[in-house]
Amino acid sequence: MIEFVEEETQNPTVVIDASAMASVCTYLKEAEVLQFDSLMNLAGHDPDGESDLSIIYHLHSTVLDHYITLKTFTPRENGVVESVANIYRTADWHERETYDLFGVKFNGHPDLKRILLEEDWEGHPMKKDYTPAEFYRGMRIEKVK
Amino acid sequence: MGALNHKFNENILITSLDKLLNWSRSGSEWYFQFGLACCAIEMMSAAAARHDLERFGAMPRSSPRQADVMIVAGTVTLKMATRVKRLYEQMAEPKYVISMGSCANSGGPYWQHGYHVLKGVDQIVPVDVYIPGCPPRPEALIEGLLHLQKKMREEPVLAKKEA
Image 1 (cartoon, one colour):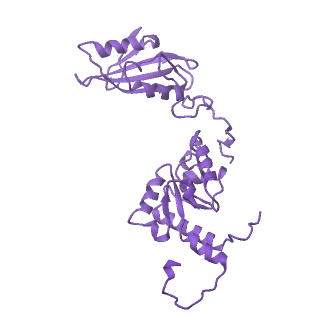
Image 2 (spheres, one colour):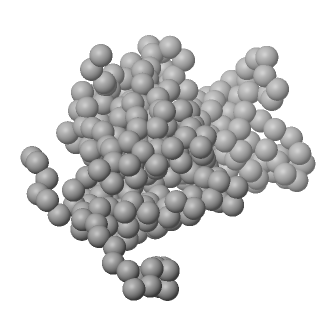
Image 3 (cartoon, chains in turn cyan, green):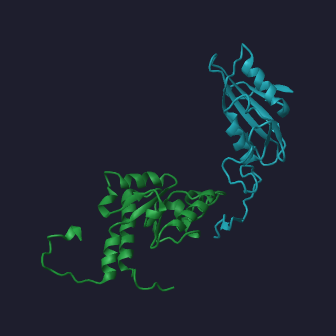
């Protein structure tokens, strides 16, 4: 379920099962020796347009001043990750953005809907296999050369 | 004619009504500020003390109902495009549009990979003056407004427009 990864990154990185995300974050936040009280960033990542999408969490403890990076993988289509929006309020909009642009669903999110694009937008444009539609509400998207 | 009081005592000015109206409206291009990106900073600079757009009677308005000109300054995303169109339709005739900067003209740097950007605001509203630049300097915006003044002066307001 948990795997420690040695990468050439600034922070220690831990790969976690998507279904365990919420419970791991709860532990990281509440354990006396860890106290990761701040989610600095939550981002989606599509490495090559073929393999699984990854969601990356950067945590910081403002009390003890240490950092950790969490990473989880989801399938390209209909991926589901446990939401941490109820643990870190920051995650609310970040998870909506990740849902909007990558199509990853966050289980337990209070209000999971698109945040940047319109409700009637089709597809999730930050995935590398995304191809834009020809028209959006009658407006041509790709200019004819 | 408050401005002309006591200047032409006992005199008569003769002109055509079109010219009089055009002279007056070209001297008060109240613009509807559509600041969408960095072009808006240049537009603000043009309106502020150093470049002082009010020398030309151009004055920012926040409501489409009070404006004569819409300056589309910046990147028009597809989400915003529907709003641009609606607010243009709310402006009273005669109305004009200035497309300011590369993004509003043609999509600019978003030409190739901008899945969310409208490639030119002229796809949704008729544009009268295009100002090139990324972003254009305030002087360029001023020149655009002066070009529009020229266009206003040459246009008949009362005569029916040719279709």
